[in-house]
Length: 100
Image (cartoon, rainbow, N blue to C red; front, side, top):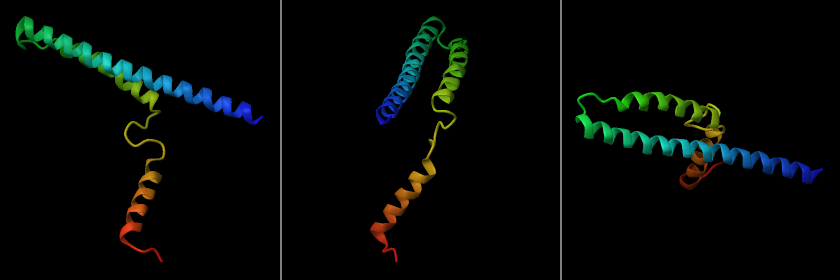
């Protein structure tokens, strides 16, 4: 029973890592492709009409939704951010103050 639970945890963790890898792949392709479009835009009309921003905006919406899906709505702080910060500050205080 314990081996099955460990295998399930492993497969869930592997799937989670795969989701994150796909997100970063999507994000890097976004940066490369939009940069390429910006270069073409500058080369053809020297920013007189920045048409590449339409593609950046459209694809950017997709990247944001992908990030929300992968990070499950906790884009900046994470699931246990508050608890980790409390422990971090308490450990920092231990060095400067003696707890009674």
